[in-house]
Image (cartoon, rainbow over all chains, first blue to last red; front, side):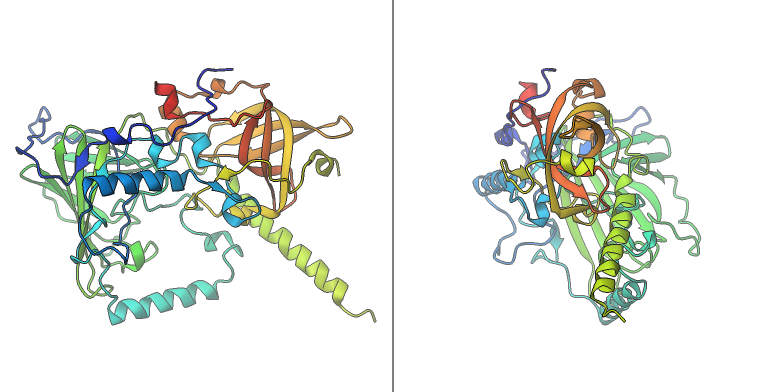
Length: 331
Length: 131
């Protein structure tokens, strides 16, 4: 048997060696340059994190101490690898640790922040506007009118259908696994390859305008520019079919990428959508150097799960119909 | 049904497995919480594909007849990045799978725990291998 098949995993090795993001630095870092003179952001990066988007309600400060942050990561790593109880819904799943997928088995930047949201300063999403609340209710009603979640393939979530996941965004937020991104730069363009679900964002940097407003895309229309050491990407032309956290298609997104050191890229984004939230909000995520290559996600190729889910729902309906027929009084 | 005879140890919780939420899809919609199984079989193919990998196994039932099973596992991306290939887990390896069967009653399941025949849990990659 191959030596790589190991029988004991230690989930916590190397945590003490994780470099810090968000700390005061003695001198400003200057990113290396590409041959055409741009700050070089190229390579593989991961946005894996245990830091929640919104600050936990029992936490009042913006930053943890280094010791607190390490302790929280350690506990989260243990929780993530924890054993589930047979016969419970979470147990109906493969084991992340057996596939090296739990976050502590890969690179991850340590974040002292108590939430990814940095503005509003309380670290939580601003309230929904009246229009945003109304739209959320309308969307829920529309979803229900289409039937149950497994009545038709179109009722399944976009991720289950291999169309789009939160790793894509935009904005790009990590999930439980497959949080790697590859950045490539060429004169006039930057390309960001999203591991899950293998989407390449190709963003012009030449100052051209956004697509006409009647052209709507899953990931919108993105245009980039440099602001000193920082790559700024603005995105509009989103679609109502993919609503980031309940946003409208009019959401305007600004993403900012800044290298903090050889190992860390700071990813910041601001969401402006007055028809959804009462004020704009911003978040910040440290991305850590990762290794490649990214294996093509090719989600449709192995998505037997979608078939099995629909087949399972039909089997349950047949069983229910048979039972109902048995209960029916005989004439 | 032969398949049912191949399913041994129903509901016996010998070992616990980790299973965080937030996967690609809802596994409890695909597999039946009321159909736990423990089976022993020989690996015939490992599909290292996304969104989740699949293990194909030949499983002998009590009468000695061989039935084919498919077991769903995790995305292979992190494994491939760390040098694991299809050959890492050789065809012919005997595995013990604890899991839950597909809701439609076919010979498919999710492997909540993958074991070698000596009872050790199967870790396809872990940071330990970098030491």
